Length: 581
Image 1 (cartoon, rainbow, N blue to C red):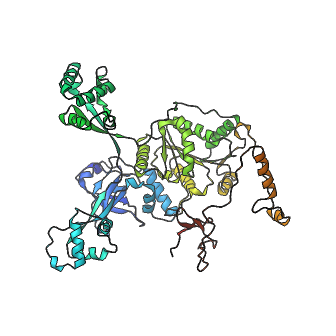
Image 2: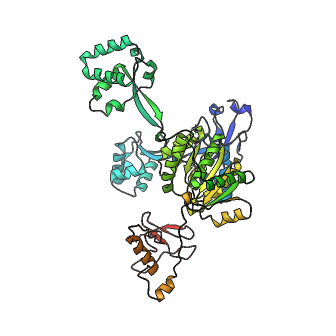
């Protein structure tokens, strides 16, 4: 999928075409004509805005640039080139195609899931009054009333029109007004991502000399509030000792969020040019952890060091290694040491976790070691934050990224290691929408394309991973000793059938469990009792007819999840909304 090596592609004298991946469920690439003015700038992996269909505008990714026009249709022009440098790598484009083929979906559906929504420019249908319309006598009363409301605004969406008139199902009226040319329907294109900017002020450079500064302060004797702002600025920014420090300026909020300063005085100083207002783009993420120390070493126990050395040895002959480490053995410490080694070689590391809830505790530990090299990527972040992580991976700002399954789509171009923690977890599997992929399996394929290594970690490996390790396809390393020589918990199996027959059960609790809980209480110890159930209720039943929702695939009752108002099958992952009465 690499761009053809042809120096003539940079010329505005030739006609170029681009095959695009569009985020639509159609099994093909779409060929568009490249405006000659952007010939020298367009590259594979860059985003472009293109018209699609009658009124729609979508964001596509350039997969291939060539000089062959399509034979079955006339190519439309690309409307806009969004990126100076590609935001999607050749490795990603290859991976998107593999996912589409393997998981039986379209490459457009893969792109739609892969790109954070902040990188997808979309269009919105809007309605506008036609100032040239004259035939009011042709309008019905409903149409005339609606048109009068639309005239009050520059433009409105369908939803905004419904809200203004306090009615629903007005599509037929809008269609009629469009047909009579009383209103104009158009598409408004919006870019979702907006960089975070910080407003700052600095002293005009002519006041950086001592003489001019003292003269300014003297002139402001008649304006004490303005003088106070200038004096405070000078006390914060040592321009007399370090003149170039004035270039960085001071955050405007230093004055606007402090009641001691006058907003009008600040505005006057800016209008007069005494202070200059400017903006800088800043990261949305917190600064490096205060206890971060460059080159922090994690000291491994003897058992951890042995596992670490075995993994390194296995990686010499195997691309994927399964680390079977019991709970509490310190697999994370092994992961950190491996990541440090890979980063030291100049490569990138992806650390996959099955659940967002797990990222907080692991990030605190990783931040102490890797500082601002660490990026975090999951769906709880805002669109803008995810775009910044994406761009941070492209620029090389983030060398190590911790994330859930969607992080597998990030634009790494020098990946050295993928760590899949708790690789047995079903959360790595996406069920809806397409692509219905398994992040662990995609990680293995993604690593192969960049000659990277994959470490699968689990205390209870998935059956398929364990089988691949035993038959020699994967490397296999065990870490069976708990950190600090802690003892493994004792497991006791209780035959509840026998307990029931001997009438020793109390509700759902066996006599053994009750005795153990009582002994723990007597020792002032705490106990946790886990209930073997997910969801709010194991089934949902209609009070009128007795209907119980069943899975269409497995013929078992669907579990009711109240938070998402869904019925889910815990066997195959099938979901459906709770039916409305």
